[in-house]
Image 1 (cartoon, helix red, strand yellow):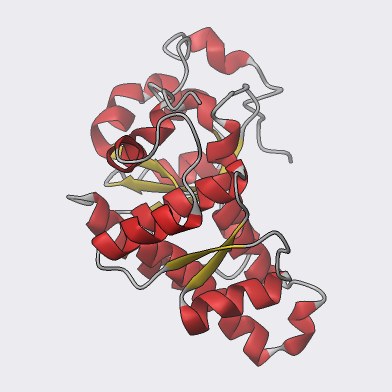
Image 2 (cartoon, one colour):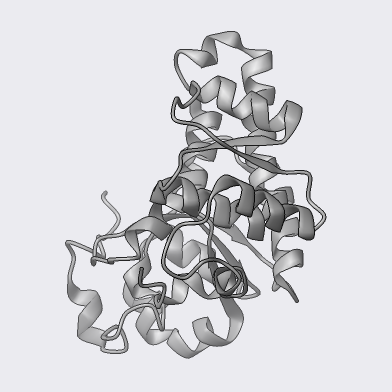
Length: 242
């Protein structure tokens, strides 16, 4: 597997400790969690639980049911092991919402839609540039990525937590788009980023609070995106509809 994409940078220390020519099994993933002092258990299963039972099992027992040799579930484990507080925050919101409204088991509401999008396609964006969020929300891509590029590099950090997107970035294509959880702060470590991400989840109540961002536009995340013309592709860098 090719983990060379920049989105895997936060995960490289963990990847280096894993088998190089196969996916790790549940016991190996659990051992890594225990070494890090975490109460997570990865449990092998060939019969996946319902979404509700899956989330409840994590909250109540720390058991994360994981399909053997399944790339999607392996990416989920990577994120759990690297950003456990953020993942636990997503899990708590699911479980809390299900407890408050059992009908959510059949039809997700806006809040669970939002946390599901973050879980699958989330990108944590940390910035101390107060102008970034309105530009991102307005999809003013040339201003974000071209006119203010050096400012973006100097003042922002992008940490991908969506395990479905990590899977896609093993063989990336241009239209991969993340949903952004933007925080106006710059963390000093991954642990601090994880803590801040978990806290920021409590401000999310609808997918509308998660602006989209084509990940190919992030400086260093595509070999040609230093060219201004790269962002002229409106099929990828879509303007805001009026």
